[in-house]
Length: 146
Image (cartoon, rainbow, N blue to C red; front, side, top):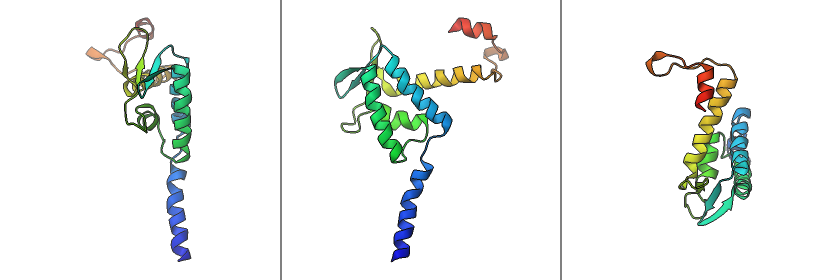
């Protein structure tokens, strides 16, 4: 019986050991939370609009809880499990920036994650992929397009 209990404890402890985000994923998650907090956007949770700062505080609490459970391992799992919908009501979160129509927070976070990764990729000096017509755009052109 003690062997069975020991195996059960080991089996339950293993997912927690595997469930920590990598350093890069942790940086991406921290960026998403900070980006929301610093934005002038408002965040709708269960029908009420909150400042980006207040929403970021809420998402930080959710993230910390999920992290302890080993349920967030990537920026994408953070967005899906903490940043997309209320865990109580299931209603999707919305983000509204300025006069623009509200968008689901999932799309907002994933767009920012893609932009952040792209910027980090560029600043690392990795080669750019060819664009339409097989040409690689110049760095000056990329900066001008931003």
